[in-house]
Length: 299
Image (tube, rainbow, N blue to C red; front, side, top):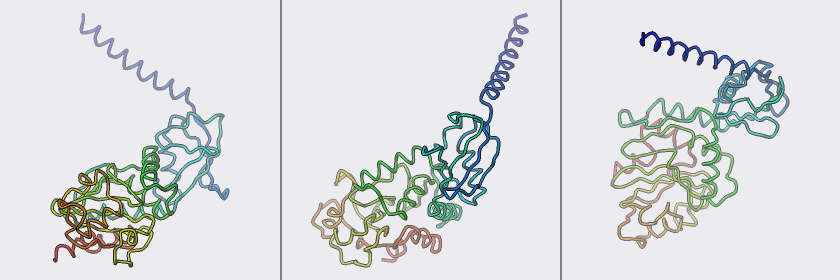
């Protein structure tokens, strides 16, 4: 009967699928992996690892041994970085030695960011919108390179670089005053824009990557002259539409002086909110609001 033929065909296909998977695994085999730090200290293995296993899995296992978040750990095969989305199929021979590189600043800031997200400061108004990366993906590396080009810099200070890695890899979050989306992180003229939240006014938060924003924008707030300082600018009007880009220091100078565009008004003095992103998130967890929001609500 036709139903029997169909059942037989279905079982045969399922059998083929299982056998195919087993053959694939047997052909892939395993490789004996030993991982060591740059200093030569062994931190993992020797252990047999399936060649088809994702590098992200191996990274997570090594990160656990080091008590670090996976985002802070990179694996090198020779001089080549192993992307977490790849597997170990490119490893030749039955055994290999992998070098482990740990960015302790990334680990520190990743832990802080995860605590911040878990706490959801601000209560019900705090909304999570995206799924964050669990390891330093090729996408994040490419985005960092793109942002450096927009900043017109070859490199950034280690503190800022670590935060850039964490922000690009982390989950999106927002409330009525703040809106962070790692896919919308922008940069211009040495300024890293990480939030554009609120309707009227719209609160722009950006990082002064070079530490010279106050002088370039001709502001009186010389206390804000610090590499990695976070600035807040509440603006009526769409800055990006009027400027056709993320504003540069001179755009902010003109807006603060009131001679840029009648459609743009800085509602509150352009102010250095905190000396660093670490201080920014710690302040938010402590008070329940992003820095400067309390001050604006009281005026």
